[in-house]
Image (cartoon, rainbow, N blue to C red):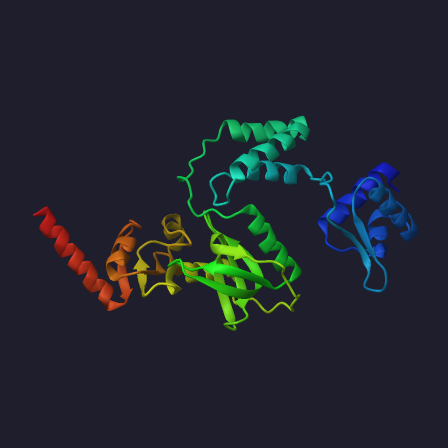
Length: 319
């Protein structure tokens, strides 16, 4: 049997790793009686950890939010992962995340064991970040956490949403998941008024609490939500859409095509398909050319004509 102090740490680790625990499950994991679990829970409460107990058949223990942030228990790999994530968080579409990450990293490195601090410091010392320029469409971290909480708790949201043209609409949504790309965050949810799934850019959302009521989660609109959002933001929203065969395998194509540019599909070991879109044929020509790979147009035929027109114009410019 574990000593009391070690058992408390183990109990706290279990409560942080899982949303709900029954008393019997905790007792079994710790090798003690349910009565001992109840006493240990009381000791955690004295230390400031808000452990909630729910009686009954479906009851159990849950670690809740308190007035202060208590210490977290992280194993070695978790601590390194958090430190690396904080180091690379700047410039990824979240407003103010750079400064906040530096403060959090300083606190974390102060308490890291020397063996882990050396690993994290080496990564920072011998890594040169190559980040994009400043992002103008950043999202408030508070909005992200509020959206994530609503997804977790299956709580209906009401918010104002600005579309691509700047027009604002009022939405009532059952949130399902957040999907992030290199520079943007998207909310996938069921639009109650339109009775259909929709994808919303998080930086265009203005939340209007209170939220609720709770809802019964629906089956996801797709098994691969990342591909679902990629289709929506790279082709479905545009007036002109195209399918292009790239003369490289999908692994090489993925090195040049980001999820926001289009959706890739493997054809064989020598080629892949790209489904993409743009506001006009002329823009689409430039869009495909910038990929920098040999290709052929599958559809629409109008894109082939637009490419011929661009070729003739370039030929005249060279002449």
